[in-house]
Length: 539
Image (cartoon, rainbow, N blue to C red; front, top):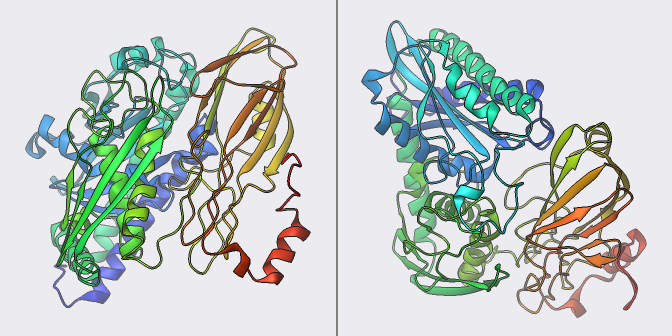
């Protein structure tokens, strides 16, 4: 089957079937993964590419940044090993931040799919490992060498035979070798599932190659994005975002230029990279820039690089949004995810649906140490914050925007980590006031029950609250306490048996004059406990 421009039904059928392939692969990872960050929080993505390395489909369970970085990773794999050199059963691996998702814990693998002796596609999978060696995941590492094992592009498997040396190197450099290798095996399993299903679909649809489909997807996505850009008023739109750095604060400067069916994002003036782990690589920055524009301008488009052909990115090399090696990047989300709010604020005058600022980025708590029996543990606990309100809606509460990692269930945490959960729920009063209220942040508290531990907090919004739009109020700030005393935000705090940890994530900002809020909506907030009298603790 060759997909012509007019065969919309055939294209839709093929895309639906291809989506089922990557969705089944993602399910295979989740069902067989060992770590909670993959199995419960779904910190993963599966993507299908044609034989030239152009994307076809991504799994519904995906991280937005991964969807944006995987085309870059696939191109790097093909630069390393040209398409003509791949053989059935080959598999490449890397976690290089400048070629992958921006930090070492995310491992990327790619494998070819052959049919009738011909290369027809690639399956690419990325998942966040529970540990990658080095220091425990923290935001204050001065350079990448502190952050763990960096795997250059190399063969993880050759014609179906796993390279045991790579597996042994991984196992020897991480605190949780069984979990890391278990998660890696779940990724290999997903590749096999996808390969089997893909060849079945090609037979069912009488497909010989995927390039006509990827070409048509790219054409339609670019066409749709250009049409959306033409609806914007031409002009220059600016925004500035300040944030909490480590040692010094950082600034994101953005100028957006709209001209016809093209758009330029210029981050000139943004702070230079810093000797801390909050630097973002170009790929990670670009991924969230594209994500923000897609959500604002045409959210129904597929996640395809064709949609971003009309977009020009200017990100000065050496800046905190386009860092050079050997910059530390493990907490790159603390800066890179701020790009989304910055773009939203810049384009708010031109895009009526742009929301107020969110409690972005949502914090992450990493709890590590020794169990009572001496066993090591590391647990990544994604926390969720409030989303900004819009011109006709309240902000969502306790979401992982702009990423979409899920909460780890309380029962699973208590089974796998020596903690006793005391409370988990909305942080009352955290959403910014407005005609439409900002989303609420999260309150999470636990008692540490291990022999010895370390709490690492990765967070923003501890001094700069989410800002409202059109008269809306700011969201609440994030804060973190251990035994009632401030924890070391973006650093580590020792934990002893019985220590009590409390965490409040930031609320989203409000939209519009609070005096104009619907009295029924305000009464509903009161009844649900979303608001508290002035001066009352929000715990």
